[in-house]
Image (cartoon, rainbow, N blue to C red; front, side):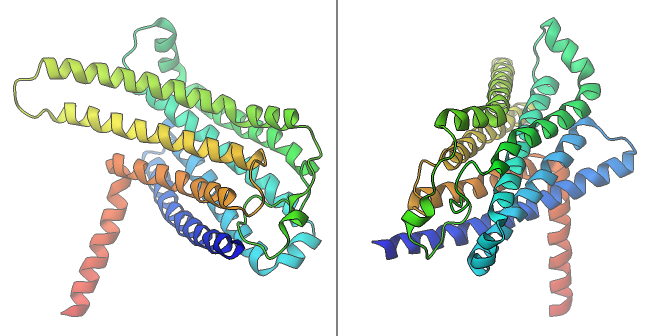
Length: 314
């Protein structure tokens, strides 16, 4: 039975690495396009600012996860003897919290800019969003840092690794003893990720509601021809809904990992790790697919590669 579990964990590890690499490519694309846009316009817009923060946090997160995978697999003795695990765990939590916060701000930005609500508070936010956004991003980064610090105080035993699904040690030796109550852990999780989750869900639902209402109005006024604007709205609804599913899924997997629900290196933990690698990568891919500005660079690269291959074949 343990052999089957180890094989499944190995498969999940390979899948997680592939997902992380896809996410790295996607976020490099987003970062490059957003940075180039800022350089060309010489203005750092709120959207580009959010995308730069989000793509950077995910680049670091996915790189950090891959580094943790390889160190714990190939340098296991020094990895634990030098007490690196607590550092890896704390940085992992900080990067996850930051990524969740920046994704939440992106959803808020979409909602404020796109949704057609006429409430005075909503209009006030829309007028002042560009001036608020830098402070929102900086504040959420500091908040993520503060709420991740308690994990450096060794809440769990150092051997309770949450990012590596494979080990040759006895599970009972790895289990570790909780050094704080479950209540404290729940409070830490809530402080770090519950607030951005609420922001993301509320803003996404409001945006979907506004887009759906506008789409229904266009359908009622349709003349029988395919309306590109209507199709764009439907595509936006699908994108926002996929963002919502990915965000909630990532949130659940992170809470399960931090709450120590599964035995270390069990099948359940391996699945959570694979999910946590897949969701940011999936979100980045949807962002690229739904934004022509981000699609342009990969299309140019592919076109250049095809031209180069054709030239060599001739």
